[in-house]
Length: 203
Ligand code: ADP
Ligand code: TYD
Image 1 (cartoon, rainbow, N blue to C red):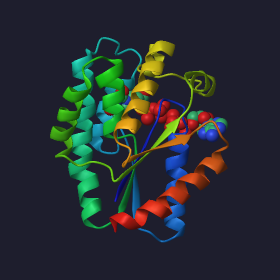
Image 2 (image 1 turned 90 degrees about the horizontal axis):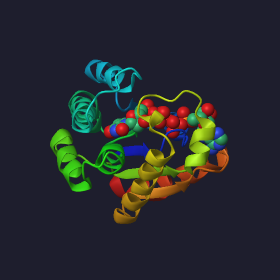
Image 3 (image 1 turned 60 degrees about the horizontal axis):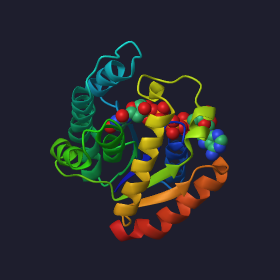
């Protein structure tokens, strides 16, 4: 099973993905955590290139293709083998990040990015996605050091948030909206409840 965590920067998806992983480990459920962009040697190099604040002249299409290159490598090197071993793969960002950030906020086009995502992943999609929703105000309050993409500012993050909400409304079977404005423990509890209810379906 592939489970992704999505949200704008500072939504707490990293925190929640790690808590969820801890829960799986305590239950002795085989699992791995992967972070996008990164988690492979190629991916970590791409991550550095993409998120360094001095690399400000990357064009939107080049940016998209770098994220997708990192994702293609992650799928072939890490995710697919783990799924074959019947592990639960917990992904801190996956396909929806590219649709929201590059497809919508960078204006490349939602369908275009969906097609290219399919090319990069061989059509692999998460079984379940937790989209952690916070306001842009909360995002800005929580984050101290913004990377290159996060530094785009309020309007950019607002477009990303709206894009995520649209995606969640479009893919209601896969994407669950989680109110990320609550306490960390409360959010974690809801995520576990949803997983326990839905997890059985994919076994
Ligand atoms: P993301 O991975 O979405 O960028 P993080 O999990 O790194 O977010 O969290 C960003 C910051 O916000 C961290 O300092 C974290 O401790 C804090 N944080 C995470 N979830 C919450 C929450 N529900 N309430 C308050 N602060 C939170
Ligand atoms: P991440 O390290 O998850 O940042 P944070 O933990 O601060 O939320 O992601 C880094 C940045 O990369 C983030 O601003 C979102 C962006 N991103 C894209 O624009 N497109 C993508 O496909 C992915 C995976 C990330």
